[in-house]
Length: 269
Image 1 (cartoon, helix red, strand yellow):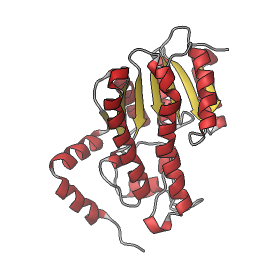
Image 2 (image 1 turned 60 degrees about the vertical axis):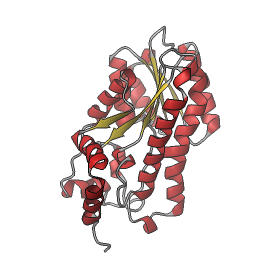
Image 3 (image 1 turned 45 degrees about the vertical axis):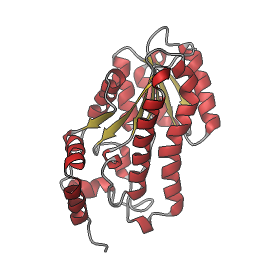
Image 4 (image 1 turned 45 degrees about the horizontal axis):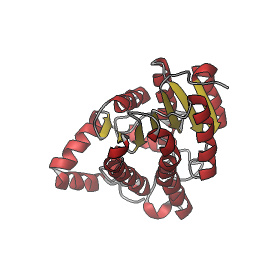
């Protein structure tokens, strides 16, 4: 079995693509051992092959299923000698469209993956984190976790929840020596931007965003911020200048932000 051999280790959910895959590449280049977990097994195999078998452990993980978490932790623990330097709760999905047009079942799935999946991960990883001096939990939230995004209402709610959970746990885990922080990306060029208003729709959210001149940042920028979070002391790590501006505006000019958001909501067709 591949082992970490004393290297620092990171456990990454949503590792088959996007921010998760790029984070694995970034940490691997820095000499870390990476745990790769996702429901997309083909994507996982491609990332694992890129990193090299000696540098990672890979397993299918549905973050909504506690049994999957238990199995993943068992394999990761065997590979790292019962240690985990960073838990990166990154798996997430979104649904784009007017609130009443998003099926309730889809809204349930967003909450199950984006919120319950993070909670499941913290429960499952806590024994390994407690056994590792200086351990950290990094949870992927979003700028939508500080500015509610129209036509992404449930997604926004899920990311506000992740941000709140992270802040609460950072205080609660103080005496355990575990830091907890949020990654707060603006729009990043990942598969989540390919969501359509309906399943199988040709028009994707990314098409609409680009047509409206919305800034989309490279995924490498997010991976670099995960690295910063693994070594820094901040509670939130904003990805992109637009994310930094949104944080500033919501803190100092919240009324103006709300007016601007309402003014930009497109009319219902």
